[in-house]
Length: 147
Image (cartoon, rainbow, N blue to C red):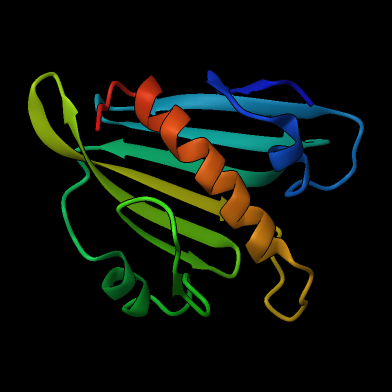
């Protein structure tokens, strides 16, 4: 497991906890327009973890957004990190005001564990929350967002 994924330096232990065992790890970063990137982490060709980052993604309430989408956000709860963060079974959504090129914008971090099984209670929520909390400041800095 590398110490950098899609240009973000992150402790490999945080990433490893969310991925299955396998022979080959890949991380593919795709810019989508000027304000969004998508990073897909795969193990043995299977997409396992998706990380989307939006700069100036709009300002809305994360919990309200999650509550309106119960199929995507199962059992959402407010998290203790970020300005407005929701952690649910297999998904994190975090909205964070920041300054980008002297303009106030909102940095959005959206993380999804693709292989999450809602019927199994395996502690992924805690692992996902730890990963997201560690990733957030690195992602904000790498996208040029300053608090």
